[in-house]
Image 1 (cartoon, one colour):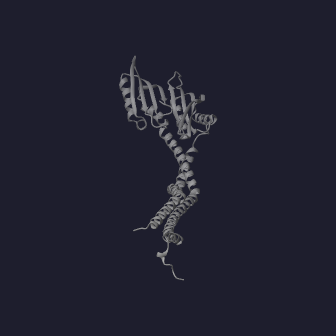
Image 2 (cartoon, chains in turn brown, orange):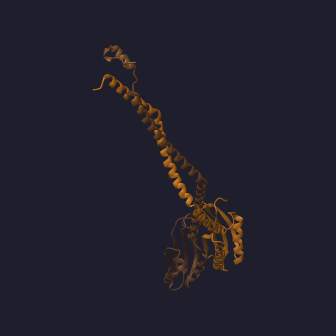
Image 3 (tube, one colour):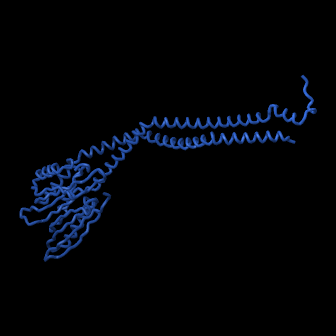
Length: 193
Length: 184
């Protein structure tokens, strides 16, 4: 079969002929575009899939640790609680003023002509650890004031008192006839309760 | 020079590609992108949690050792507490020490008006003791009480010379016992 001579064909025939011809350029370009798009989407999908897989693996690692983690958290809470208890006990020991030795030494430090009329131990604040020793007494004899001052000096030099109390203060000395009546304060400042 | 037909084809192709891209963007890329964002945010969070968990788990042996040693020390000290917050136990100790030094007891009373706490776990119970005894007998009683337990302390004492010719002085002493605050 011989091909037709195209120039002899009418315009209408030519248009119909071209329409009936397979359009090669458009499908090819479209195909390429679709292929590129699908390929890009596939790469993107794979990337998301890898990321999701990685997340799943991390999650499973985390869940594998959960038992040990809950143990660690429980032990940490227990340690904190124990530390609080130990801290409270340490604070008690730091605040505790022992009086046995001081009671005895107080008698030894009192000069011969000095007599104590009142010994008063008070916590300045019950919740805090401050403590105050108030001594009221009398000094007899000619060297009354000197004896009182000697008593104060003795207290200031006694390590049992100076180790624990911040201040030894002679609050007052008054004369009652031949006697000297004095008030003495030994004070321990407050520390953390 | 492009023919009209070629221009049409080109336009068609551009349109088709544009529609394809827009369609795939909204139908596939956008949801996947959102998913990726979600996954990467969650991943960062989970990785941080994992690192933190590993750090905590690594300290587990050390934590266990610390717990054992602190607990042993605290328990050892708590065993030296006198009684469990009950007045009868305190009275027993006070009486035993008084008998040992020959000190007669007057009124012995639990101070219910005092609420001294030590941390959140311990509290002090204050007991007031009235007596009449020589200065050194009171001192001996205080020494015995303080030796009885390191968790006993004298918080208040008032000793007057008095007028007793036998050398006995009226005294009021307040002793604090440390106890677990959960108990009455």
